[in-house]
Image 1 (cartoon, rainbow, N blue to C red):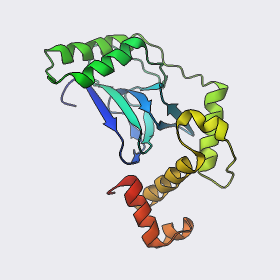
Image 2: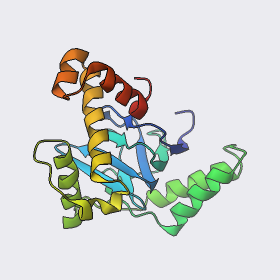
Image 3: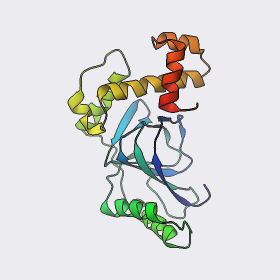
Length: 216
């Protein structure tokens, strides 16, 4: 990180498959559109439109941003002199956070000493006082389970549960399938074996990966 606090606005033209790693900084991910999946331990948590999630520094996690999602992220370096929350969990975006994200997106001058820097410091002060919710409610766990089942042989019809994601069952299932193939490719497995497991010709699989993920 170049600054102690950084802000990013991302329109995911492609599926973004993040590696499982420890967070080098604390981050807040705010979903404007689409769906983000955050793996913590054995559970993969869905973050839908209008939701936000806090990841503290050194948190072991993997973040997947589905294709066509729109997100904002606030990153806070460990160099920050302000103490930040040290537990992962949902943090509902307040009007303040939404307003800061909107203003940051419109600010042309990214000077740390100007309005941009003041907005980032305001966000830092706000997040330093929040308590992430790591007690996941029934609806969240049902959605997490429904999405997990789309990635396996126990797939269930859960269209009502999945409505809040903004995607259909087949759309999510396809992206999860591509994600699994990409992970296998990055681990060194042969394309021939991956295509066989995916029940697809190699050429068709590579075209699907290119459309969904872009260049690996």
